Image (cartoon, rainbow, N blue to C red; front, side, top):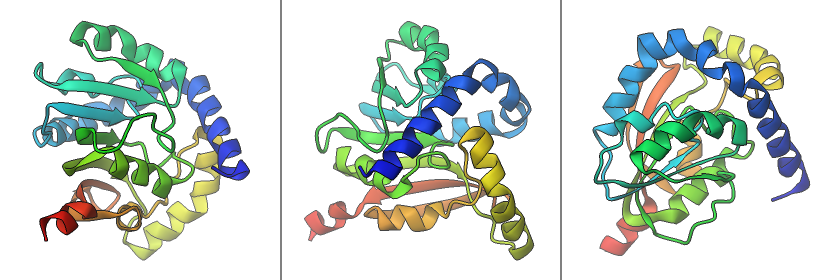
Length: 215
């Protein structure tokens, strides 16, 4: 990892550590109106038994894990993860402090990797997605919910204009082209669903190597 990305990663960690105390409160309206419903939909597609959640945050997805999963959650921010620990402990899900861009797992371990609202803040999203592709089994899947750059030209201009401010305050980029990044990282994008206009999307992807091995 180059020095610029390392510096950006450290800054992002500090921002999430700082905001952890108020994070759930800040997102409460979105969680009540949309996010919780989207999370339930996503987790109906999870295949076990080995499941990794990248960017477990304050643990908002933990309630959707089935008992039969051998699940692990990782996050860049210790303060965010501290909020998730009680529920994770009750469900027997280990948590680890870890950078999505440098996952401390071997190759081809997990059946499913889940990430929700994560790759808007990973400094090098392609590297993070490549790490997910690496730790997935050849027949594995990546399930993502992300907010992305809107397709509408006026909205895209607005998001691009506001992005320096939002990223400076929270570490969140609101103009990511996640669909393109998924392809660049070595995935086959199986399905892309609009959740709220073209701002929020759900992605289902598989490693390209799955196709190669089938030939």
